[in-house]
Image (cartoon, rainbow, N blue to C red; front, side):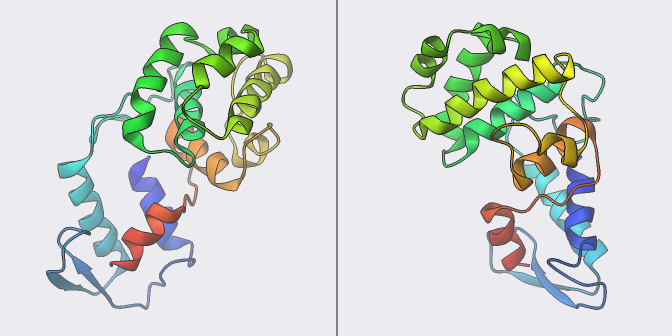
Length: 193
């Protein structure tokens, strides 16, 4: 999924064009520039950096492993992490993610949870509208989609609390779809290329 996300980002024309000649650093956070003549080489270098430095996170497949598209619970975990990570750091989210998935291991379990329990478990993450949308989305997935997340960006965007970035991220990460996933972090990395 990460390779598809990077290729989608580069091929979309929103960030670079095939005719661009790009300076990239060996490590995106360092200043030692190396000249690259194509976005494909640029993407390969960025993905190699990711393979070497990716953090081990419970909502992400490790580098070099295929996406877990056959795991019916994987989209729930990806969606939950994407919602939790909005306006919050990874360090803050890890504990909450573990607690949520232990308490509510499936989208159906979360959908059945009392609002007060979810709000209490969310306490400390802030932006409580996300928690309300989390419940509304889980309930819509169960009621309208048989407990399975839709697998396209368009269908995901119809769910409560899922906008363009989150829909693209879920489609790419959970379902291995081609999607352009651009947020502030991606913009900062691409600006360094």
